[in-house]
Image 1 (cartoon, rainbow, N blue to C red):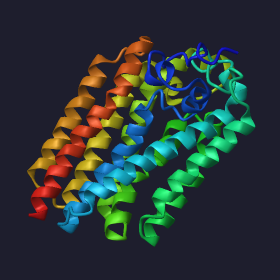
Image 2 (image 1 turned 90 degrees about the vertical axis):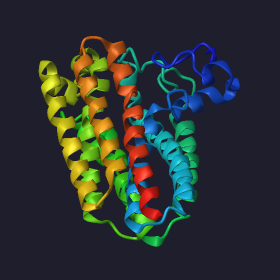
Image 3 (image 1 turned 60 degrees about the vertical axis):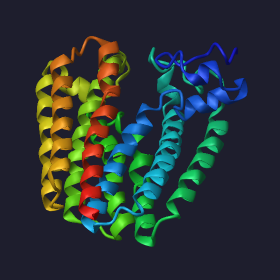
Image 4 (image 1 turned 180 degrees about the vertical axis):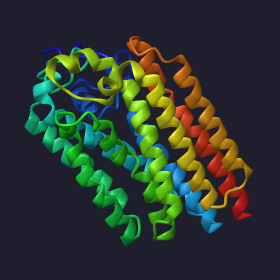
Length: 310
């Protein structure tokens, strides 16, 4: 097979396709380095939590280092998680138009090769994790149970997005574990709010595959909500903003954090207004825009932490 031509359907025209050495492209695609949006979305709760915890501690001296480690860890572990997902879904991906060009169903790598690559990525994540305190290390390892279970959920429940939310929001706990060596109530509410956010944005993403999923028996909140998706997103995003607001109140933040939350809420609102569930390119565009939504909140929390540390 021509590896250069075998691009993933929804990830053409990126740096992997254009610049990466031919031998590396299937592996970079397994890790989704051609589509880094998922890594950014995994990173956002980590940065939120680290900034919020730094504000509680009135100390931002370690925040740049923690932010860098979370960045590296998010890209490594999202890559490992996606590789695991592709290994477990190899019998399904060739039945869905958007995923049949992924490296395993396309024959670019074997499942065994993908497994070795997954282990290597996990080792990078482990190297990041051991830079933290013992409590944070244990907290990070605990998330692996959810990560391992996620790919199987779409086969048994219409709520796989909930399990994804549990995994992708774990960073909301990690920032407190790393910075304070504990998990405060504020972290728990931040975690809960992030879960609602993840369910919302991944529902939009799942609408791209709704017809194929229905034919092959795969379940999702996109199929569950159907034409009620706008209402469901209003509830989920509203819940996300409310729960994160409780987290901010418990952490006794100042005005920059509230301004960041207001900008976050405004961004989520315009997503709901613009969404057309039958328009797959728009669903993907709105899904990707959640990085900017997350960065708006992160910026507010960062400025709040800096002000509180002085």
